Length: 268
Ligand SMILES: C[S@@+](CC[C@H](N)C(=O)[O-])C[C@H]1O[C@@H](n2cnc3c(N)ncnc32)[C@H](O)[C@@H]1O
Image 1 (tube, rainbow, N blue to C red):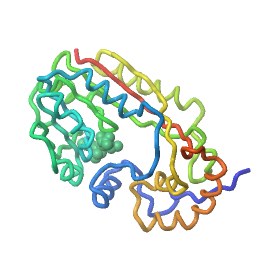
Image 2 (cartoon, helix red, strand yellow):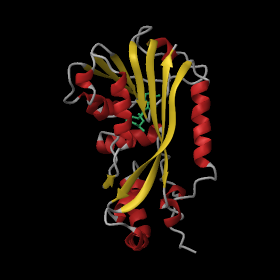
Image 3 (cartoon, protein in one colour):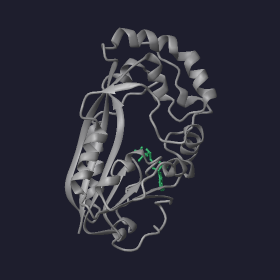
Image 4 (tube, protein in one colour):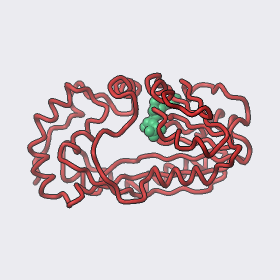
């Protein structure tokens, strides 16, 4: 039976990831939503697959909306491929970073996507989100209002990491439920079928990543947490994590699998 490691989620200073407080802390400490651990990937990376899908929808005169754009690094990759891009995010610190070195065809604004959007009807040919708010949930009107008829809506969501990681580091990570990927697929199928979008594509797929060093297992777990909590986790876990890592790592690093959902629909 492998040793149970310290679970940082049980510490009172743990900030639940992806909450407003967690994003504010990240924006304050780093200015952006950037993964801080070292790793390499098998190609193609999930983000490259998603970028290719978005690019296939773009025309020279397209107007594009990136919902939950974070610090705008991904948004900027489409600058020369469309007429105008708007990146919105609710976290001021991310948008302040995004505005630095921005192309004149891109606008970044602090906007809460849960509220009425500051855009007129039929404004965008393409509306996408990479791990941010999906504007086309059942009963939500804003996504359908701002996208043009025939416009394309795309979403990429990270749905967790495993591929052995969770059983190697019990406590630090918990097992995913049985049928996890089937249930994730059913959830996204429902989400797409309940919207007013015509389904073009839905797939759940794996991205293979190799964490470079033992510390990277802890850096990944503590992404967005305060330095004081990280110090506790390092002290309690690093030695055990080093031992496990060295026994299981390949020459490229410790292999893990990231699960992603990709959704594409057309506005009717
Ligand atoms: C997981 S991060 C992804 C950031 C960026 N798209 C990327 O892939 O690097 C989710 C983003 O959605 C933003 N977000 C969450 N809720 C939002 C809302 N109601 N309105 C606008 N942005 C929101 C967060 O601030 C965060 O930047």
